[in-house]
Image 1 (spheres, rainbow, N blue to C red):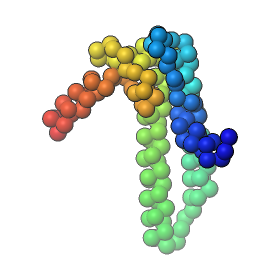
Image 2: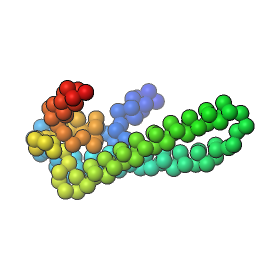
Image 3: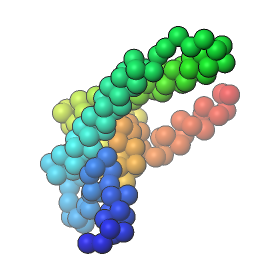
Length: 147
């Protein structure tokens, strides 16, 4: 395989996992699909944990008492942004752990609101999705009306 073809294949990976190719007569959320999504979620979780570790090391290494107020302000802003990003990651980790639990209880892949299949494509795009596209769209419309 050429380097360009390898790069294109890597671009198509979902957290290091090749997209799932469902067969026509295949049952939804069968063992292969469950294992596919478990691998995606586990890889995503590991990636977030690695980012957290990296952030801790960078913040410990980079923190210094800079004499220039502008440098100190820039450093504090950078740290604030990094901490905000890690807070988002922490919330995402909770969703990932919840999704893995849903896999264990056979609730993963089914809409929480209406009970229909969420769909392989949607779950690959958003592995922590708990609503089908129709219910999510309705929820977003209602949110816009309240705003």
